[in-house]
Image: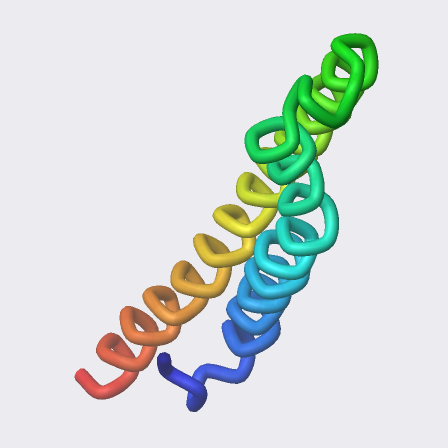
Length: 95
């Protein structure tokens, strides 16, 4: 990472925070228990109606995760675009 470009620092840092909090922590807190309910315990422990409800909430959580990934991509792109812009302008200034 190019920390010398101050304008890109916060974009990339925001991207990393979304990946950590939005993907890892959210997955651990939200998806892992639902995976246990749906794939390990299954119909032996839970009713079919409860499994359908769990699958629906899993799917809604997945769309949230897709949205977070899109936001993460946008932040990363903006950060690296700032680095690119800095390199182009500093190259022109040195000529």
